[in-house]
Image 1 (tube, rainbow, N blue to C red):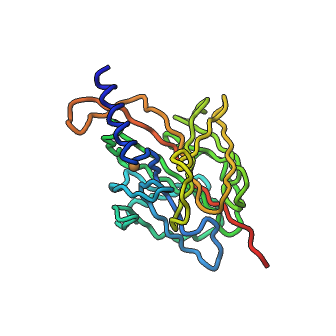
Image 2: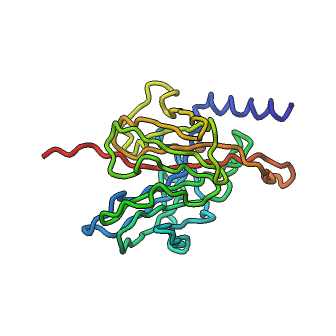
Image 3: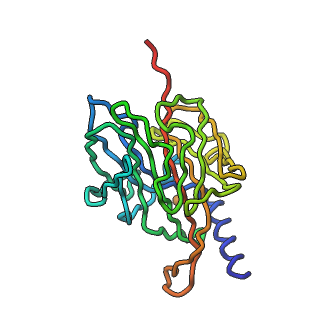
Length: 258
Ligand SMILES: [Cu+2]
């Protein structure tokens, strides 16, 4: 009881200090539709508050790979250290050689969040399409927790709704809570209130949610669940809870004018 109260006080203090808790794992490719004109995709990995543009350090991820047509390519050896919002981040240049839908997946090392007294692991993914192929985007990539798109996750317009299914250990999560943020990349936008920074939608009994994205750009969906295991805290003694995030990033375009 006492521990819980302390954790709540810490959370409250963090909120009063203007620290909202909307950190998102980020896997952001330079293109989400690959054409022969540009076959190389730069994929940036980071851990930030995407709307408020607050950076955190991302330690070297535990896994980073690409899946296409059931074929998995380890990209961890390809990543180089970089900076996002003045914090440690990672980047990889990936050559896309044949038509297909490519899923990029990052599993970070557990991130200790003192304000919440928990570890955070955001399994983060994005899907891109290359050279006209559009099959396979609706398949789970077999990670611990993930959002499987039910809306094709590329070639969409701002204003479209996006539907996805939340899976934890391969099973749908009824009533999963999904946090939604726009990556406010150029810092153009300000939220009218703290509530607007992170929007929230709940999944139905089958783990399915729908959200309409009102603006062009990268939209992130994060379904957060408590892991059924604990990890030793930074003191090496007390066991701490683990928040598992299934994070999906998808890009919505604006119409082009002639
Ligand atoms: Cu944070």
